Image 1 (cartoon, rainbow, N blue to C red):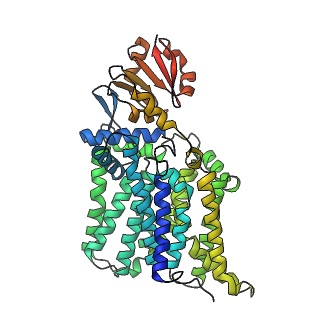
Image 2 (cartoon, one colour):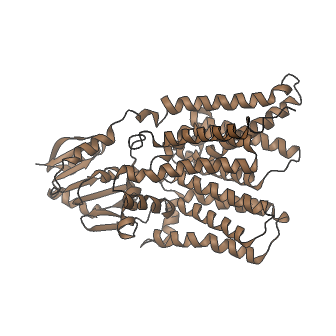
Image 3 (cartoon, one colour):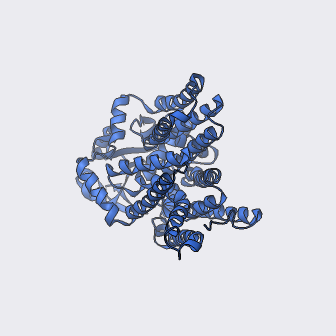
Length: 488
């Protein structure tokens, strides 16, 4: 049966192609970094928390000059907050400085994805898998913002590499167990959804328990190393609110009223919406390839088993969310990574029954991967979330507006956390309402009724909804996408 070439040419050619793909990742990770994508609501909160962490060592946000509130209901942890805080400390309090660590997370996640495939499936599958990741628009759409998806993906890759190391060393060595525990602890502390990574790995290890030599010291090393980063996360994350309340929030952060109805709606999306449909197609191909290999009694690595289990868990978790596509992202990344190998398996299986396919199985695999990469590359450049904002000047306009803002003037930021990073002054008040059940700075709202702040920054749609609250203010102009109100 024809197979794919081992390296696509000599070693120098192979690693030249690898560098080209990593250069593509680096280019799109940095291209128009502060403009595309635009700042998000959640990103604004996370940057503020990182700034507070860098200055005070606390996960707080400012609600008034010299007054801070602990952000207990935070859906990211210190594995993301700490690098962003370090960047803000080393450089300055700017959007560019906040997003620099995200570039590193994107590039390193892509590199370790290649390394994982290289060690588990071989060089050809690794290069083809990286080609699909490098051209995947959502990698940059979710990754350039200060959000938890790509950092979590980076730590997930480290966890799977640690699992591969443990398996390749025949489950010997206390240090290898500790390394796996540490990596899975860090990924679990990055974002609640990534707690599914240790859950998936644990499930796979349990299913393969008969082939794993059990020693109490190794298990203890893994558990201690796993608990240590989680203990630090709990210490930093849980303030005056009980852990039970926070975990309940994590279970339904967007307050979905009808989970069965939401699940039915999201399930329908896998048949009617482009991104879920693409995810379903990739996962279906992976399932088919795994079934073929199981039928042939081929050995499937613990890494691939764990990646698949995690992806399936992500799909189930997505069904009960508000339906935002970034909650499919992790499953799509792993499905893309294993797509070239799955295509080869399916093409070979078809070739066993169709003579005209048999000699072309390898070419079919390469052509399909090339077609998918070209389709994604087109979207990355012309018809994706990031492409939509390549020509944006929103950040530049915010910087320009506040470059002449008098530092002695107070300003109230009304439910617009992404604007804080642009302020030239600490004389600001802030009110946030991330969900219907959670708010910060509500005790400051009386200042608006009294006309105390000199200026107010607010989103136009929010102003239209809550206009009665701002009787003492009049419209003064726009700062990029935000409305500026001035005291009458």
